[in-house]
Image (cartoon, rainbow, N blue to C red; front, side, top):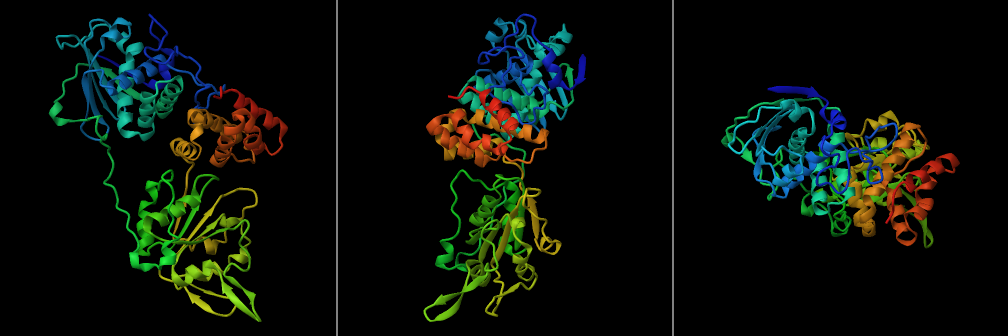
Length: 500
């Protein structure tokens, strides 16, 4: 028996087959080929900013991709969370190419947490125990990578999507994304790899059928409750959001939806970077719960002393006309205050009484309006942006829940871009790659500028008419705010890619 404990994924970059530096069955790459033009993961912190491939990692990914296509006899089995067993016949062409020894007929692999055990067998199902150093410390460690890829496919949505994208379109770009994401997921992990004869009782495992929905180790789906159909008028029901399919409610907001319906949560504050979908998240909560959005107020422009209504001329009289915010307070429904920390504090003072336990507002005409039982208040804000202010502590404390909305995932940004600008699909991976490289530059130098998915959408839309390089001059380069040196850097990032 031979054991090895190491940061397996990092160590793999020093390993290569003696008989060839080619990555078998990959779309044209060699060991340590630079694939930066196709994709750079946002967590790639190399000094050069480049991305390369490791032969054993890449061949492990290809091996599991072939396994998924059912070109390899064998199976993947799950017993408990993270407890996987896999066996597979070694394809003849892989032996003919020298990736595996000719006398190996079958591999068996176990993986649980950071423990991986593997063993090769001949055609008589006898374990091959000779030359185990070579099996572990050189290219055949790709079998361990194939097993970890299989486990990721079941447990990690991003890796599963990468494999599915690669199988649909086996291009250098899709392969670079798969290998880079796979490496970045595991680069800091230490694995104990053992070479030892494996004896398992398959009946104690559940076989995973990749032709059906992949089983997931997750809790039972929570059903989202809705407001009663009769709670709102016909006019109000018309204001229930109906967003397109590109927008999906984050699973972390499901429980908040139910708390909103039951009245345990009446006030919600969402904060996070620009372009992360905070306002959309508010509307998705309302859409999923059947709650009308009576008014959306942009606090950078629209919030003034007349937010609850004002006196206006009406014939020979001056009458008080209440706002949609007041209508929501009186009759129920939601209001959304965007970028609430841009507002002048004196225009928010009415919220202290509105959001109290016995909520009410006093209008300029002297009327006191009590808060309806179905009134819900949503607010969004960016923290630390130019022009923003800290919320008054008393107001901040009146929010029942405060939720940080993280950066949109690559898959969410990609879905948004392709849905809104279908023409960008063939370039969307490059768009995301450039986006991450620019963000990395901004973060590394702590610059007071922002690039968001909105900039990417504008870029993709204009690129339909004048190409990506020219369109970037009007949509991406301006984020530099006329900093000529930074503009030059952004151009160099854009120019790295070969735009279709």
